[in-house]
Image (tube, rainbow, N blue to C red; front, top):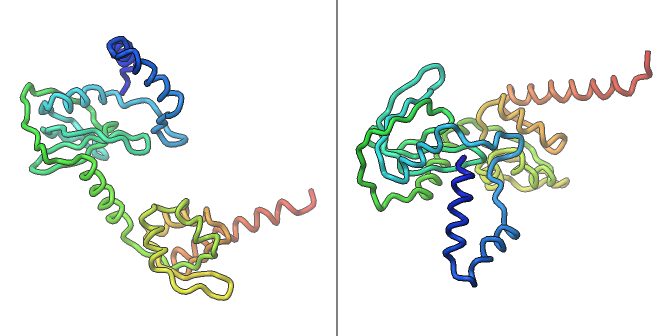
Amino acid sequence: MGRADALAAAELKVLAALPRALRDAPARANQRFHLDAPGWFGESGPPPLLRDLARAVWDDETVELRYRRKDTEVTRTAEPYGLVLKNGTWYLVARAGGGHRTYRVDRVAAVRPTGEFFRRDEEFDLAGHWRGQAAAFVRSVLREEATVRLSPAGMRILRYAVEPYAARQAAAAAGEPDERGWMVTVLPVESALVAASELRRLGPEIEVLAPPELRERMARDAARLAELYRAADRPAG
């Protein structure tokens, strides 16, 4: 969380206090396991206010958040319950406005401790709450559908191109394969624009049947790609 120096000093103190038989356990673990949480091509540094939020989470201290929401900022009084790291992005789960809400830490503009402490609901399950919120978020985003034909290879690699939830739904809805092994199914998508950017990754292993807007977009992109390769094969001049 951006406290590497403090962590290193604490680690040395803990190691010194361990029984001799256990002192090599951290080194053995570090040699065998490594967590690289951020995703590829993303920033790995912690958000500036992560340390302040972590302290409030640890102490069960109510805070006043100033939070960026599009072009505006809002202020919320929140009881910080936990921090979650998802694909290199930190999220704060806090009780505010009568329910538990989720805030991206890198959109928190300011944190002001109130000096007041809240009584934590001991039955609150952070991991379970996050799983439910994440699943509900994905379902809320994937509000449209696309009818597609997939080759056997396309069906296998679909999960690398779209959300896992969408890939599972498509696999469950797939019809019987034809003589070439191709299957027709219904795929949950966010929009034609987003779906086109995702489904292009499957190349010739997928054919979009509907909606017409998405099929036309895929056809235009395929035609442009074919023209580029035809131009590359032409003699110079």
